[in-house]
Image 1 (cartoon, rainbow, N blue to C red):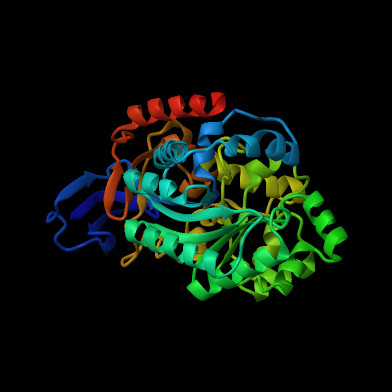
Image 2 (image 1 turned 45 degrees about the vertical axis):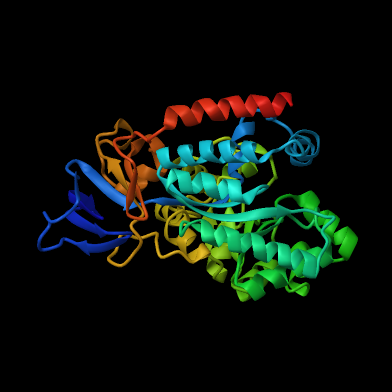
Length: 416
């Protein structure tokens, strides 16, 4: 299928973009009228669609369920007990609701860690968007041949589901897994060439307990276990020291900044974005789950990201609007090895059409600045993922049914 987007602004200039199958094939083609579908871009702009690099999508069912608690109390007294009651159907409809919210706010790829990963994958496929999907692991974890065969089978099944799905490994954290389990899962991810999604140094308590138990900070301990590599993506990375940042850079490991969740759960500090970036660590953006954010709108997250960096450092240049925009486009795509994040010939056709008449981005002096500081997801009119239109004129097929069924499933879970 060929899609033509005519007379749309790209980097401030009117442009015509041709999409063939799932690739941006031509920018300003010579024969622009030969296409299966023509979209009028007058009064609009095109941007890369956004990527959310740390989510627990199905936790959309728990949005607003347990707010205003410290992290450990929130997890142990509210979230984990509820998650013990989860069924596959809960995860599907929670993830389906999350996918709807992401599409409506311009996100076409998310990096997810949760239970029943096949259900999250199915929800993403049904929504027409990409997902990096990992099953979350806690101890007690039986390592060895039995688990290896089980994981290989699960990964094979996920790979068969759709080209939109990328299987990954999801060890939860140092405080929920033994050193043996962490080392085994890391080795498995390297052998199989799989991305590994992890929570790292989110709170001071996590770091202090690691030092007390092991005599080392988390990154030092994990590095001795062979944990970090180009395959590892580490969410939060708030309580890092200089030595730990150097280790992450040396191992080419990635970091994911989750500013809204970090502020809401009061982790006490901002991720050291500039130090990580200067060391060569690729930093991307994540919302975390809807139970701790409570939004999956990356436009809101960009603003939160940039303002927290400026405020915590007392430096208005600590992070710029361009920095923030790259966190959920080019940097995020590089982090997971996806050929996206830019509007260029040969890139995947994952893009958004922005309504320049949206009141939040008028008068329009600088589009990136407007998107980061002024806009929210409502400025996105149309979304294309993998060369297919998944939202047109702010309408997503079946959205009313998704909302109704997800709401019903959420209350069923809580009352179970």
